[in-house]
Image (cartoon, rainbow, N blue to C red; front, side, top):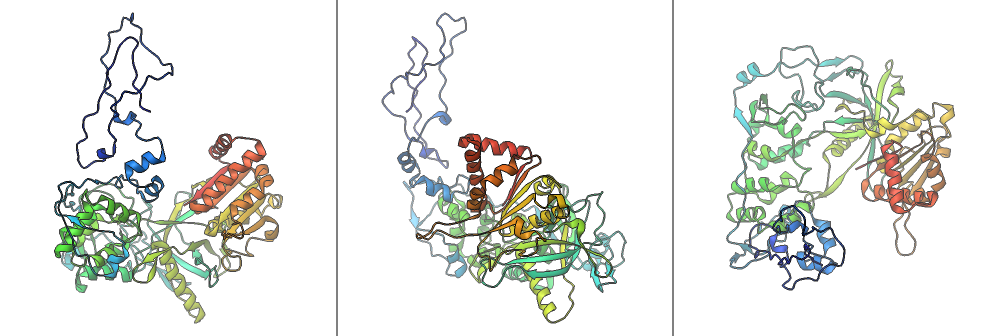
Length: 624
């Protein structure tokens, strides 16, 4: 209901809204003001007295943000033209779903769509396209420039490289940059280690960790594949006293797959003899390609392959309008250009919204879908996101990680689950980080089966040693660990540390959710001598109509007495780790219900209770 505030004894006319002007915004979605004045509200309100000494102010126009435009589901559907729940599910948050729907005076044409698998896989629902498009962005400015240079000039102007360190014990080469200065350039093999200007952990360089061991934790038939890695960090340099911590996470500089890089350069028609030739890179500003360096202009010597392998993320982000506008500018096919321009325009915002919220589309797929577009590499790099580190939690106690091999080899352990998404070529494609780990693991396992020793490296650095899991871990006090999938990996290190203290053996409990205990229960039998007493495995089961589904959050409710005891004990901790979708949300709701049941609280009070525990460091949820 719309009401108008009034002063006593003063009649104020209803302010009418100007007629909406059709433009490029969502103003057409605001309904017209009712013609009939609403009755006075009977709710008492603050008023001004006629005898007040203050001068009377003229009534101010009401702002649009104070107008109630909907009161029910029917109002929402009338305004947006579709159910509100459907709108929320597909909305990317940028307001692009509120597309211009008025088409008065527009003429349309049927544009032939590209006939290839890459375009069809994007599932774009493009009908007749307006012949006149509005609000099309300008061609984005290139902030990156590649200048050809002769090899001799490149060697003279390049920063002095660092010498590799030969591992006498393992007969391998450490490509980590060190302080010693070498006299030749080809010291860092960028096929296995990033260039030294890629520095996500300033002032420290990326460390080349040798794979000490690798194995698959899941069995054939598991829905997701998970691998375990032992990484040799014996020679990791000192960093101001910061050491690896239980529950900490290391950063991994994973490269783009070599075949994808070559495919991208093929699509851009970059000659093979230029791909590894030194080139002068100039940037106008920003941190790229250093990840977390200073925001400044840069000039450095590199190669096109190194930039695409280590610096540009070509598969993890949804396409943006500037990227599509760049492809349109360099598309030689008229129909491809029209479609790309339509996706950039105000008239194509609805289709663009579906595009952004649909399946992930890689840069390679875009170039396959619009094969006539061949933008210059430096312009394309200007629109690509920086290839960022991936973080993985330690799955062991790093303080007791000495392996009696060749003296004492210090190892850290991590578990990696392979992330897959649909792809138009091989049905599935792996993520940047998890795909890199799987390729390394398969190489190691294949060599081990042949009885061969292989030198495989993981570019890493000490990442998050002050993350919530590491920061809130305490050596005493009851502790409940709730995780599903690879989320239980850091809890293995927690248990290893706790079981060293005999007084803590009965103060730690683990609730582990798995899909199938025979296929994907991680680290079964590797938790210590008290595993049967401290760990409860919950096998997930979807509801099929004949039986109710069962998940790890259901076990949380079943263990309500234990949950309530732990969280109300001195130094008690409840840790939750895993996927936020489904598991994380379900466990949070279960904990609230436990507080309602055991504490005789209302839902709002129970939520406030867990928020207080979170602020106090007793409830820690690390979800993704």
